[in-house]
Image 1 (cartoon, rainbow, N blue to C red):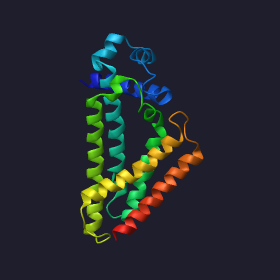
Image 2: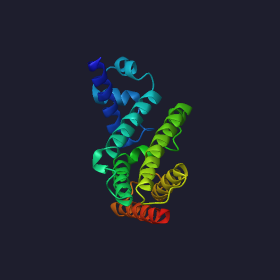
Image 3: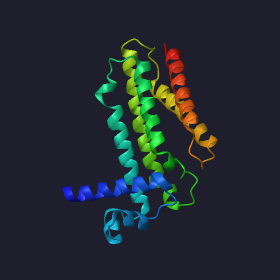
Image 4: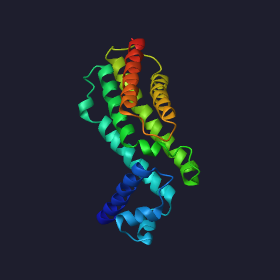
Length: 202
């Protein structure tokens, strides 16, 4: 069982490397098998199709993301604005690292537009929103901000950050990697928005 898990993880890591370099839509299962020097039957044993492999990759990325933001170094003792800034910087690092995965949004690859994949993204989005809801709720309990509908607060906050990210992707025409200057501008805008958002809740 342990060996099986290790093999599965190795395949996911190999897929992530190729996806990050070429994008999801331009990567085939055959290429991943060749990269890892595994037979196609072995690859399909762990992942029956490309869609299941993409789901595995998404799980891995989000698992790493939540492991970091739920870490004790973002302790509740920190002021709300500082906690949120820390989360934004983590999101930014993940965005930079996995930017090529964003380029598959308008892909003709049907496996990337499956209902299963969309449902999985929505599940991860809901988990992230629930996490941030608790962050805002804790801040309200400490008297940092007014106590209000934290579900709506978390949703609006995250959607606002996502809007800035979308503008960055659109500016890059979904083809060219944003420059360091553009990436820095995106981070600065998100941090600025977060600060204003927190002040508005006080």
